[in-house]
Length: 176
Image (cartoon, rainbow, N blue to C red; front, side, top):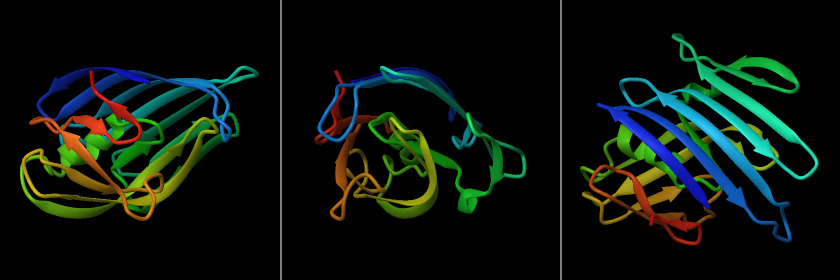
């Protein structure tokens, strides 16, 4: 389950969200809290993330500077990298993070296909990798096909609203 409070100002987004996941055969139960900010173009500027498991709590901060380099701060320290020019972050178990690329590329407003470098955050282990995310749309909200490291070889077709926010991510979540 994901709950997100979103504030919009033009293309800027500020979001505070929480993900709660039950234990499965492949992952432990966990909770994640995030705080995200984008710039005026809709590109991610900062993500703060706290993941809580039964035995520990871990934190991560990813921030993009004016040179489009990313500073990643976690329990191991800090690192700075370009992540192949990524301007977006995608996070496992979160339909909301797909909204960032969809809105920035205006895929909810026009037919188009894009493949963009993306920072992909894996949960609950908090892995941070560079990945390519491919999106294609047939236009105004009918469905947007997504290929990211978490969707498999056939991708996933998302349903979005008129503002580009995901309302149905098959197999993961439906907005209520």
